Length: 133
Image (cartoon, rainbow, N blue to C red):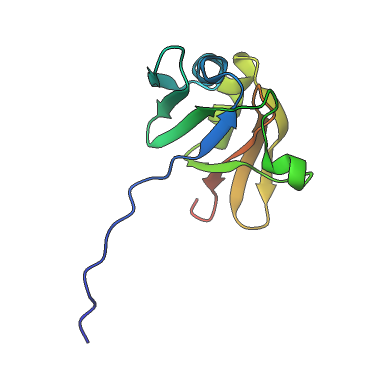
């Protein structure tokens, strides 16, 4: 039986709602090593940052408080980014002053991870596959 053609998913871009999109974009640039792709409107109400195949989008909140998953679930994550070298990224982010909450740590599901908290409290895990030596 022939399988029908299907669309290929290329990437995903989480959209975080924040009180200050410029502050968020600059934090991701300066601390997490992303580049700023652009701001939208003046004053900015939306921003996009990119690092390799990963993107984050920031939309301006009507509230001064961001709404993160960790508010709903204490140890929840707001995004998970697959990477190729957890230790190398951890070293880079430490040097940039990132808030690393966990790791690098080996998980039972064959990933080596770090969890960071950004300037608005969003929790992001960066994980490298360890199932292949």
